[in-house]
Image 1 (spheres, chains in turn orange, purple, yellow):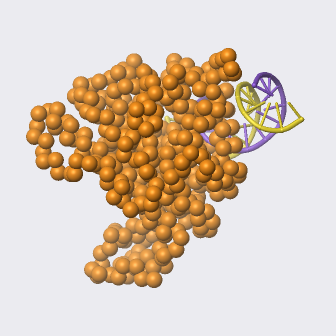
Image 2: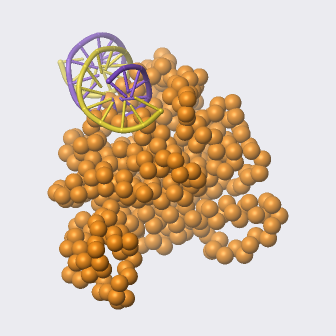
Image 3: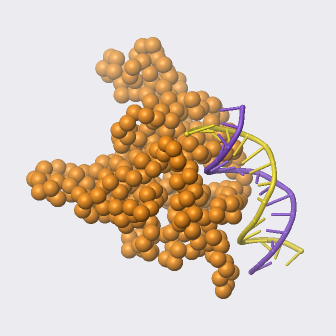
Length: 395
DNA sequence: CTACATTTAAACATTT
DNA sequence: TAAATGTTTAAATGTA
């Protein structure tokens, strides 16, 4: 099958600097001819390529969303500064881009959720949570310079709660089978914070996980065990007896304590988290967060399992891809981006789905291309996309 | 290399 | 009694 003929004898969007630019590939190709050969051999029309293509679609989609948010932000900033709203170039309906993307039925509600909650005074260094330094909006809380996780009380309003916290990546994680870049402890806390009365039963926490992340709609036994483990392990989680059982709450002080400890000396996370209060928390920041938070994990996260299951597939590559893009977008320092490859990125949903297989039952699992992509588990040649590869993808 | 943080697994103990 | 919940211990793994 000949993909793209060499219309212009020598240049191809998938070829550059002697390297194949197919997502996750990076094979070296001496010359264009070799590249074409490579392209036809390695990226022929098969399940894998197709899946990768879908994934790429999603990447584009996400970026478009991001872009529209940035535009909106810019607009607001300029307006605020009394500048000419420099021609409202883009169509005023930013979030629609999504729908434009052919993508199958997934991401049904994308837009409604994360509306760049108005430019709540982009100027002043609003720091509602000045007191608690790093309590950034957890879930990619990018924007949200205002309202800290704290005083939140069911922000139902728009689709689902926590929307404001999860903001930009909410839909993403909800539908993409991607492991969220946060530790269990962080997630658990977020779950509890998002509840109306700051307390949840174990089961409610479970529900939050499955409801919020597509990733946690698999291997329940594993992550649920992890959740319980975390609840018991961390002092920040306090069990409170209740009339009808017990609920879990968060001891914010403890949580912060442990957090700050972790980031004593050099604390990238702190630095990265603060921005949100500096005012420039936003889509970009969102992306950044992904990167940072991820980084954050990078530092600590690990854990047996994943790594090995890891080697697998393009999803990982894709995520890398996105992460790289996002990180780049937002990161200013050169510093450590080379490391933005939290291993969980490689953590493919266990190929050997233990139990609770395609339990897609859950509410509405708009299916995700990603998921689909993974689907070709035994794309045998997993190793071809090993971590090494992945990391490189970033640079 | 050591100290730590985090994830997984698992064995048990308690409750429901 | 079985299923849920909670506690603990330990291994694996990555980072400071």
